[in-house]
Length: 498
Image (cartoon, rainbow, N blue to C red):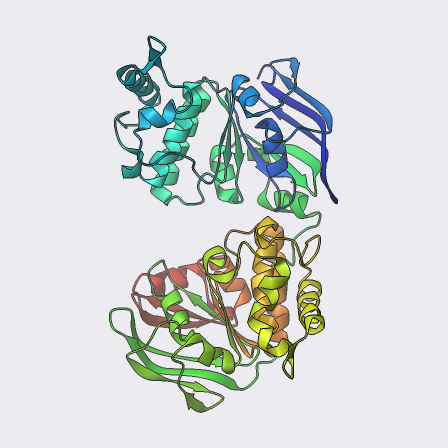
């Protein structure tokens, strides 16, 4: 295997009120794809920022090619052959690939004029070297997300980067695009480029990495060979406990019917939807992308109108024409995209928890800040939201804690029905287990839950009953004890219950 290209020893870093890194070790070898794994808040981002020259370590030692190095800034990081491919791409869309690759380091002739032709030729050499199938003259705006990521990588390779850090690179990619990216990673490994790969998707780690380093709460837990380590062992390293009770679902008796939908239709979207929901029930809603699951949730909550059909609540027909109508019936809705639809990202944690409950904070004609604080503190404490204080900006919290804040916002209204659209999307495995416990506890307390999920193990292990949708229709109903992934997929692709 030879000597490591990068060694980090005893890396420590503190910020006001928090020790982000408490002594982290990391060894990276040439031609190796090495995963950095840990829950949100484990310290991965801080470690990456130290390598990128954004932060300076407080203590510890960094060695590159056997020489001790200090990385005071981003420029120094690049000079050492380190490049970070961020999850949020930072290309200039109206420029060509060549112009983006050489942005800030343009090739000039006569020291005055940019040599566009030379830049295009040099950029094309990099693109061709890794068989990317792109022209350096193409405008970046015309590229797919996967192709833009490849341009980011080509940009790194153009400055002869030897260590490339990829932060959640497949988050916005399709399966086909992910394969293209992985093909490029394999080519880079063959040319002795070292890759640090950050992802929550464990299937990807087993497909593309040779080693995995696990972090927890800013601490180095261990490094293991990917092909010698089972998923359950990685999970245990990440969360500090085994996950025999990962899907924390409590057994309890269901109550009476609370919600019933009869013959609901929305032209070209939903067709003849019929369903019932009982108090304390977790009703799983499954189906492939485009099946109509989110559209059904939006119709129930009054975001989208319906053409025909009826909704009964506690046995009485009701009209839900807007979200306020649903909220007045104690129906809550946690949307699929928490950042765009569930949170005010520039506001505090407290603001996001209390925003839906402001009416409850008025005492006669005066607003009670004390009562608002009670609502906020109850949400933080009951859901174990990790934050320095309620005044911390919501955007600074991990994905799992942001999701808890969205749920807390609705729990402050004491919902009787709660619709959860992809409740664990984009959060780490430890936070998922905590969300499952919250869902289970809510159901045990009598809240009726509709849970939309694309993760079949989640649907199978958390639902009392499962409805499967295909092209806007419900194609079948399965009791959890009878459901299997094969049965769900049969219904999700247009099959019918046999």
